[in-house]
Amino acid sequence: MNLILRCLPLLVPYWRSAALMMVLILVNSALSLLAPWPFKFLIDYALADQPPPAWLTEWLGSDNFRTRLLYACAVTEVLIIFLHQLLMVAETYVSTRLEQCIDRDFRSRLFGHAMQLSLAYHENRRSGMMIYVINNQGDAVANLLMTLPSIIESIVMLVGMLIVLWTMHWSLAAVSFVVVPALFFASRYYATRMRERIGRTKELEGVALSVIHEAMSMMRVIVAFCRQPLEHRRYLDATQVSMNARLGVTIRQTLFSLVVTMSTGIGRAAAWTFGGLLALAGKLTVGDLTIVLSYIDKVYDPLETIAYTYSGWQDQFANLRAAFGLLDTKPDIADPPQPLRVARCTGRIEFRHVDFAYKGRTDTLKDVSFVAEPGQVTAIVGPTGAGKTTLVSLIPRFYDAAAGGVLLDGVDVKELGLDALRQQVSIVLQEPLLFSMSIRDNIRYGRLDATNAEIEAAARAANAHDFISRLPEGYGTMLGERGSRLSGGERQRIAVARAFLKDAPILILDEPTSAIDSKTEAVILDSLDRLMEGRTTFMIAHRLSTIRRADWILVVDQGRVVEQGRHDDLLAAAGLYKQLHELQNRQAERKAAARAIWSAT
Image (cartoon, rainbow, N blue to C red; front, side):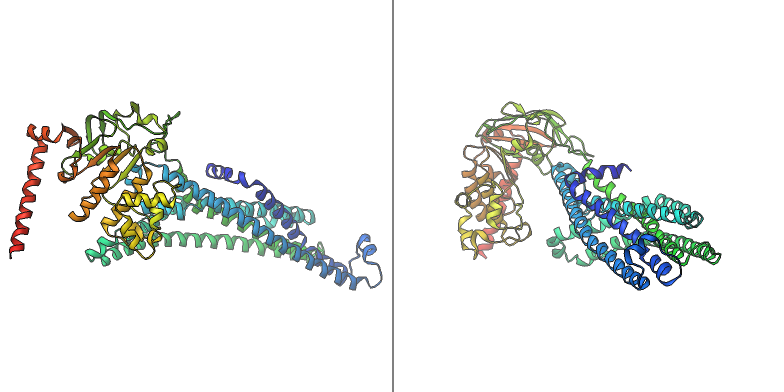
């Protein structure tokens, strides 16, 4: 019941449509109750010798009464059917539109909430499961709410038919409802036993979807290692498990349907037999028996609808629990109660005794302290896994420090609104992430209100305009997923252009040239030099040659800043930085010697 109550507020914006649908349902129910009555009049007063009521004789006249009644009954029946179908069309339109609106709103709410959750949340969960919840289980609210009208209609029909039957012959009405307890207990038993089984089946179906999503995102690796058969087998295994679970659910649903159908069949047979005996005993007219049998036949339709709907709710409840489970997840990173707003910061960043650890790990960062002045270029170097990327991720609050504080212009970043904070930061990643839309729109992602001239200026600054202009469709060129139609260096230049367009006072460069060749690196470094001008910049680098413009260097090892200072001072200190510097120099010398030998041969 709590799940149903949580769904009802989604009806509020569309209460007029919901009210109209209820009116149409009630009118349709009344027409359904009227449908058998023309047959009673036809049988009793036109075909049999029952005396008609006075009002009917006055309305049709006594001359040729039976023929007129025959025509009147036929016309009335056609009119009832026509009105019923006309209202059904209107009801279908209103209900479909209402269902689609609720479905859209709830899926949008799920997607919007998922976008607000932290990176840590997404990194700890399979994205395929998130897609499954939004795409496959997001319609649960609309589906459940749209079953309520059919339940209400069935109840109205049931009550109406019960009143008519009770008025005509109470004992026959009692016989017709003898199977209700059996339906109730069967539905209750089914719901209790199926709840966990259906939920588990949904989880397994989500796992199968996750396998597909992961394979599509890793296609380049799969093809490179010729692992298509392996991934195909993984998918078959996952779908086999989910299929077996679904078959188990389907078998039990079919058995439940058998119980419901047999119960209503027994009820119909009992009511027909008892009604026939009453007619043979002269306690019912043939017309009354026709009405009674018609209602008894129809009275089981709403009973079956209620039973099937209640059992079907178990499937929707499983979807709702997953969907509301996502909505109930509190963002790890959220705006403070009264966030501070900043127009444009100067860019002074200070770390004060910052600690941080990922879930299941310890001391990812430990007691990190340093200051980056406005416009300063700070290089962050150290072994792989030292915590360099994690360190800069605390600045835009992708994660929050467990202890200590990160200050922007003297204010703790946790006191700033997330949007206001992140507007101050541009990021160029090691892997340039692009969308499957045009180059123009990918650059415009940095600032959505940018003009075409501003986009072109950003591309020129990033040394990207020339290669874009050579493309057949220029800035309108549509990119494949993750920008697969461009080379690595071209994708990176688009990412740099996006950062130029954002024009944020703080810049984070996370090894932006580590995956490209030396010639392309020189082009990108040239554009990055322009991008860094006047900005507080953090540059993560494995290759120390790329930090030529660094004003200050942080050396990170095992989550700690073990050294910091200028290049010459760090070399003189003969610590980890000097070791890394000498190691890379030796590697460079060996490569140069190898190239010389290769050229000589």
